[in-house]
Length: 117
Image (cartoon, rainbow, N blue to C red; front, side):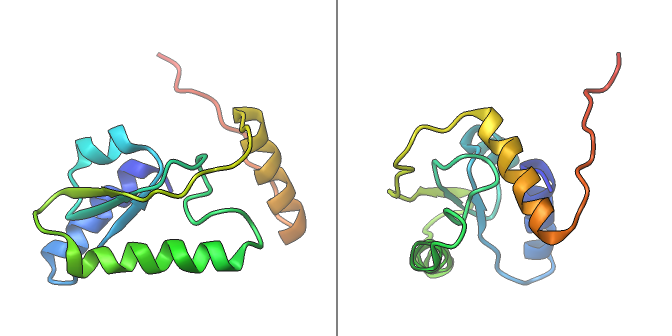
C-alpha cells in the first residue's frame, strides 16, 4: 500500500469514530493528505517500523507512534520521531530487500511500470 492510500484510509476510519495515527516515511505526501494524526520517521521506504529482526527498535517506534494518539494537540499534526537510519541506503537496496522478503515468504515479485501517457 502506498502513502496516499494509507492516508485516505486513516481519514475514513477516523471519520467513522475510531482514532487513528498514520506512521509514514514520506513527509511531503503525509502533509498533503492531512491525516488525523501523523508520525514521520525518516527511514527508507518500506521500513517505517525499523530494520528487519530489530524487535526492540520496532517496539520503541510503535510505542512512540501509539502515544501520539493521546498527545497530538491539533488535527493533522505530524510528529517527527528522532530515530536515525545508521547506514547509507539506496533505492536499489529497497528492491533487493523486497526480493529477499518475497524469497523468504515464497512470494513472487510483481513487475512495476509507470503509466503510459
